[in-house]
Length: 205
Length: 270
Image (cartoon, rainbow over all chains, first blue to last red; front, side, top):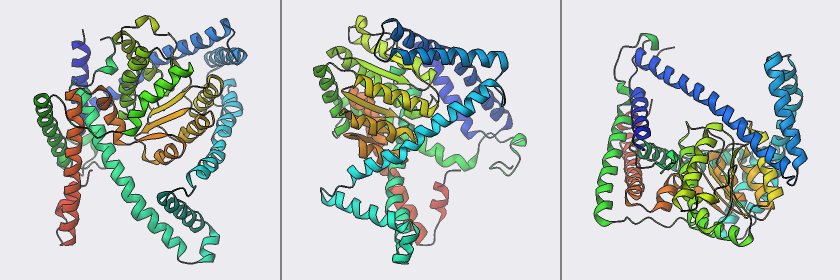
């Protein structure tokens, strides 16, 4: 039962990997065509996603689950925005464009701005000097915070240099070590999928 | 714009890019390591893999959810199927869902990408089937939320605050939303386990979660949880490749210091 999907995975995986090494213009055109196909798949999947969203919220409304009025708002927004998009288009100046600029963008920015507060609360927890390692982290953080603002340079002209060294030497070394591990892990996972060792993504055992 | 062969890409007629020979050699070596370790694993029956605290804690998290009668929230990250991290998230979900089905807990998987949602739903359904409890699979437990980053964050944070999951598991590729999610989860008192291949997000998860899988551990998770010899062979191959990479970096460094930068130049990926 799984032979077909496994063969498709193997062929597409090896072909795409091979195209990485082939700079021939025809090969690269073929690569672009293959990547273009993913857009078609995505368009169909988006319909499935909308259906899932609809079913999930419709069930909440039917069963009067906690917070069901919010589901009503979600479904209403889904219907209205989709309808307006089909009727008037989605370009700048259309109703959908205006909804995007005046509702969607400010709401997104509001969520993003919360990051400042959660960083402060996470930092407060992380910088408690409970062990020698945590104390080292706290001291490094203090040096970094002071060294990256104007007052740091006024306190000592060496502070900006120290922060640069912290970023460029110990920090970069650790980041690169993790990045090498991630790179090898990604290659390993890709090979597992191409060779059919990992099959759980296929479902239907 | 010129390609690596110093000709415009649309005029390039070469069938192999010599600048990428190092990548090809690396992949072939990795394949060799994989093959050797698969033979070793089949002969021995298993391979030793060091304990990974974050993965060992998954059982604890599921057990806690069962005892408390609350769901496990599985957040698969914000990437699509072009990211290897998403594949890792799917394979981990598959193993996790099987255990959840076996002990009768509940899972909730809000998705950002509709393609990922479709695949995750099928993988979860299959996990319930493999556990011998296909009837326990609740349609809608893997569901689509939004393909907008902060709309997704708002929805998932809402789920955390309303449903109060006993365990929040974040696996896959995350961006600016990582701390917003993890910090909200932290305030609800849930046990939190995260794993990501995005180096810049790791500090946030380390701060806000109980356990964090660092980079490559995310990719090792599936093999670690499955314990199948062939899967474990991939972890061993990864370790061998890492040792080789470290040796190559060291050799390039020494040779460069001695005025021979050829190896350093060859290792650079174009």
